[in-house]
Length: 232
View 1 (cartoon, helix red, strand yellow):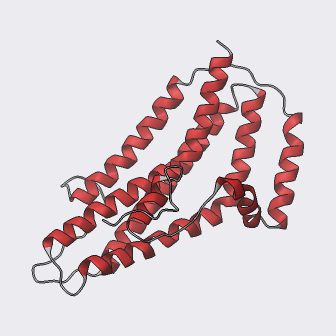
View 2 (cartoon, rainbow, N blue to C red; view 1 turned 120 degrees about the horizontal axis):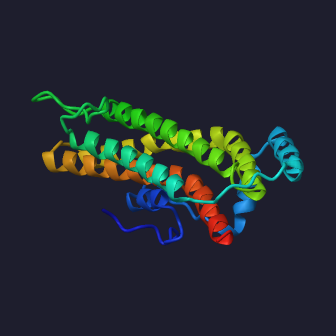
């Protein structure tokens, strides 16, 4: 595996670092211009929706409950473990009741990337559905704790809707990166070690993508835990 781009630092997500390690993404991302980059993603209608949401937040009535994040964190960890296990088991070709399995080749058949693309995209759909359901569950829990967390949950719901299409297009690019890696590894001849390496890298890429998808949910849970600490 090649060295990471010098522009990609430890502050970037594991997904960006991994793509850079494979020389598939050369991006100089900076938190200093995050606001500007975010603004470019929002059209006029999105901006109006966010503005209306922000205006409505102070009018929400306080909802108070005991702030205990243990159950919420358990749900998060259980969902995370389920999705991780699905990726690992399918990439390992394990004989389990998982509908997603690493493509098997008939003897003497050359690997075709379309098979692996369908495998990766199917996992992306599974990750998207699982994380979106978890994110909604966490937002519902936040709304029962306090007015500030209820406001945060409402804002997160709007942000998820506004940015969903942009996120979908971003993740849709990853299989194209993976195809570049496949073509590079296979070269002019296909060997078992190269196929094994491609399988390991595909698994790592899926797990890095899962981590990126979970980051907004982790942020909500951290806010929940801070509120619990404040009420102790």
